[in-house]
Structures are given as C-alpha cells and as structure tokens.
Amino acid sequence: MNKLISKIFATCFLVTVAGAFLLTVPFFEEQESDVVKTENRTVTRYVPLKSFRNSEIKAYFKNLDAFIGDRLLLRGQIVSFMNGILGDPELFTSFESLKGNGVIGEDGFLFLGNSYSKVLDRHFSKNFDENPGNFKKLSARLKQFKQQAEEAGSKFSILIAPDKHGIYCEKFPVFMMQKPCSLADEFTAKLVQGLKKENFDVFYPYVALRKHADIPLYYKTDSHWNLQGAALAFDAFVDHLKGSGKLSAAFIKACPEYTQSKVTKTMDLGAIVGVNADFAVDDVDYALNDHTQVLWSQKGSPFSNTEIMQAFAQGQNADWYGEMRNPQALNKVKILVICDSFTTALSRIINLNCSQVFYISRHSDDDFCLGKIADFKPDLVIYECVERDFL
Image 1 (cartoon, one colour):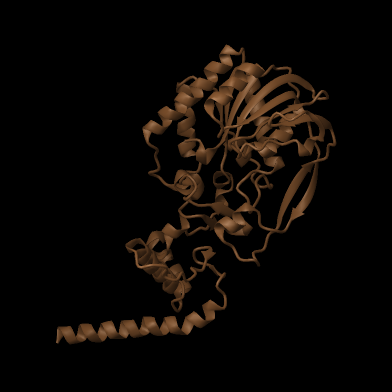
Image 2 (cartoon, helix red, strand yellow):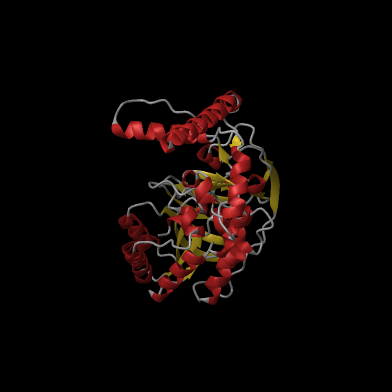
C-alpha cells in the first residue's frame, strides 16, 4: 500500500513538473536573453551534448538541470517567497552560478564574478582567506622592488586600487548577502596591516572613494574607475605620500576641469556578464578639459608631442612600457609606476601633475622592472595593483 501511495505521489509530482516545464518552455525560448529577476542573471541557455566523454555528459546534465529550473512555472514567486522566509539564497537560487563570470546589480550596475580572483568571496564572505604562502610570495616580490628603489635613491610606495564591489556594494542584489557592505573592505584592510608590519608604505583609498560613492566614480558596465574616481584616489594618495615623507610637502596638486559625456552602451562587463542587447545603460564618462601637449614614448619609440588625454598607460599588457615628459607640470618630480589597467585613467592625472613619469606593466618580467628602476633613478617608485589581484 505504501509503495502504491509513493508511486502515485511520484507520478503526480513528475506530471506537475513536466507539465509546468512544457507550458513555459515555448514562452521562455522566445526570450532566451531575459533576466531571471530573482537572481539578476540571464536565463540559462540550452547547450547541446557535444560528445560522450564523462566530463561532457556531466556538464550537459548540469546545464540541462539549470535550463529546466529556470523555466518552471511560478519559479520567481516561489524563490522570492522561500528566500524571504529562510534568508539563505544558496538553498533556492543558482547561487554558485552567480559566483561565475559576473552579477547584474541594481540601477544598471554590472560586477565581475568569482571567476576573477574570487572577487565576490573576497568582499562578501565571512570565511574568505588566502594561502599564507601567497602573502610570502607577494612580500618577497615587493621587497625586491623596494630594495632596488632604495639603491637607486628612490622612495617606494604601494597603491591598492579598490574593486568596484566594495565602493558600490549597495548596488548588489539584496538576495545575495545580508548587509553586503559590512565585509567589503575587511580582507584587504587585514592585508594592508600585514604589509605595514613588513615595513611597506601602502595606501588603500577605500574610505576616500566610499565617501563620494553617491557620484559616478566607476563605470556601471566596466570594472574600472573613471577619470573622476582615479583623480579622487590620486588626491588622497598624494596626501598620504606627503604625510609619510614619500613626496615633498611642497607638491602642488593640479585642479583639473572635466568634460562630461553620456555612456549608453555596455562596456567590458556587458560581454563578461552576458546581458542582452536591450540592457539599458545610463552612465557618464569624463575627459580632461585640458589640451596640454606632453612628450610621449611607448616601448622605446621616439618621443612625440601628444595631447595629455592620449598619453595613457596600458599596464594590462605585459610587454608594454612608456615614458611621459611634461615640462609644464607644476611639480619637477620623476616617478616610476609599476601598474595594471587601473593606471589607464590614473596616468592622465599623474601626467598632469608630474614632469617625468615612466610606466611599466606589473605583468612584466621582474628583472625588466628592476633594471628600469636602476636606469631611471626616480624620486618615487609606485607599485599599483587592483585589489582583487593583489593577493
């Protein structure tokens, strides 16, 4: 009797699920790029089985499970109801999928996911930690740069460029985590303290940027800060450097004016996150309202007169380096910057303030960086790195 009842219930359940699926699939297939509103992500697309290898079969059924789950009748209402009761999105959403390429946030904000240096866990997980060996490797590398700088008669400082995740943490979907901002800077703050114990001068402009998060400092659909964000970080960094004796107290900060333009198309995060073509973008960009001509050289090419907005670092490319000379700068100071893509915007502000700057990608060979420090003999060496990749 019990077996019969079990079979009846199982049959009813399968019929209900299958019926709901069959009823809703035609509707959803016409809207393949729609967003699952309860999880702020695009609907899972069907991926055909490509081969009968074990890994391919597992991947196929994992995708099929998500494909069907996204199309169950009243799924959104049920998920919202259960999350409200249980307060645990991992039980009733595809939470692990959100830790992939990216997340669609509130007000048109897009964010990188955990595929990029575990960036979500770094900012929002209570238990996030790193292998102590990674800190030792980082410390050893930085000590090489610092030692070479000191031998060249230079000061050495570290700038950690904050992730957008922390600065605009309120823009994350509410279902993802409780009070997301409470943990946003915790891990990096501990890292900064660890570096200071190793006698490094390090600056993390999280607080300075958070104070002005009511204005656009980062692009909504790009992972980087815009010119305003870079300028605000530079302003706070200069105050830190002057206070720590790395820059002269007489250093004068330029007060640039900006031209604002509207951004209506998705930038790098559009493709990474996977939003549809109709995703609404309402964002702004800035350019320096300054047509100063500087001397600019890339990868050893002859110097050429270049408008300051067109002389920018490309630290994301491992084989790139460049040098800028600005005779009109308010400060006669030589700086060498070991950098990544966050210095693209930052370099325009640095070039406006400093008379001579040498840029090297932080992805370059260490010996190349060390050799350039020895040859250039700057007043200051800056090691800039985005927060998610710093350790």
